[in-house]
Image (cartoon, rainbow, N blue to C red; front, side, top):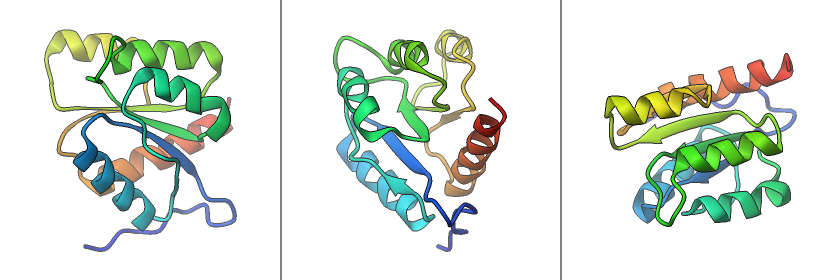
Length: 135
């Protein structure tokens, strides 16, 4: 499978993946690296994501909605928003209307239901970067 390299080659876009399924996190991280993005070490919980945020300073966060622990991806995203304007892309294995409405309230760049095609993800990441330049 061929992926277009990220358009911003002078400085790699850094992505933090918040995903509690290890196999999914590994596969997504590899796909992101193949697309030319810099990846932070994936984290599995909202608490870990909030700890890593000031250390990793990601350009974009890919956030699973259903996370292990006492804080789901939507709650985590609320806390991320309180810290700054980092663009968030939600990914979920579930598509209930209640869950999607809660996620939409965060105003994410995109919401994807798994499985996500790499081209869709790349388009959303590029849109997130372009959108953050106008903030």
